[in-house]
Image 1 (cartoon, one colour):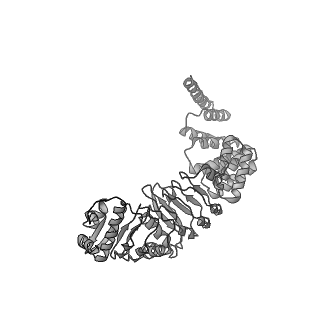
Image 2: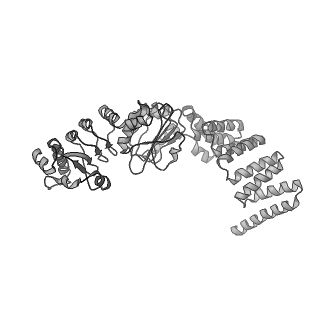
Image 3: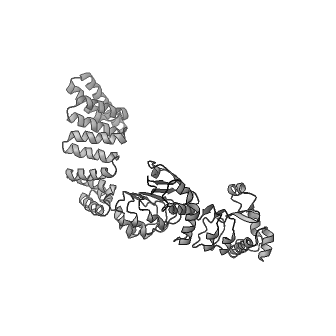
Length: 453
């Protein structure tokens, strides 16, 4: 029978055995029931260009050897062991087959240059596969400066994704890109960021070997069809940013509470029940109680969370707001400053901090805080009006006028700013400008009344 397949496919006799077993898997799957021997012959491409640009073709042959093989369209639950006999194979796609295991004979494919395992159900990668991937897919990353002890992680992700990960500069804002297949390294070559975000296909599993990256700070595995998280995730002690959104995760290991440096966690759009989420310490940031105005509960919940996650920005922010509403301004100031130590660019936090300084009568520091907020969001009208109000409190009327006019340049329909501006003009004796500002305020108020009617 093998001899017959050799003649039909015109290939090496050892590789003919693979086609025999492959057709058997499809007959059993009732995909080609009643078909003649040599069913796969019609899926042969003449060359790699045709193969790469047409989904119809399944393999390419060269001098009696299979050099490319794409099985991603077939229903194959178990891959034939004879695949290891494809001695000249360079391209292999096993994507989306939902395989739970692989034949160890794959490690004999010494000419393999492309390997795609995405979309399968291989929960644990065997050591032989890790070693094989490292030997075949690590050199590119070594050439890019990646530490030799960590290249296997990128090689595994490349195989699971079916595409090579590209290096980006250390200051790239890749976590906010809509599409990403990238990594970052530090000066010593250690991996500090991995970013996979592609709605077309994901890595399907969370490889445990990622947990060996002790320098990893940012990890994005969004839209990757991941169902389970390994317990070892708690070993990523330097992790600051973790995005696992749009997956199929249904439970969270308790070890996630060991990520004490975590600043951001996104688990949106997974298969997590409300019960699971309610027990996740990261989510206990007092938001529900804050919405209800129950500030004591907010304070208690946030303080409990921050004992585990001292860099949980949302917990620090809500704690600061709760203390502010309770009139405990010193505690509110401390909470918001803790937030700013983690993220000094958050304009909303600087803005709230300025309100606290204002309540304490510290107008100078209120101005400093507002200016920090304006560095991030220079076109927010109320920030400029608050700046003007604090300048007015200090008696710096010219600066107050400048800030108010800037605010009105952004939003000219704020009657309160016009009224405050008019009061400053009257104090300075510039009555014509005061009258003009009052008229603007009156016009806005009248128009508002007309709209209400």
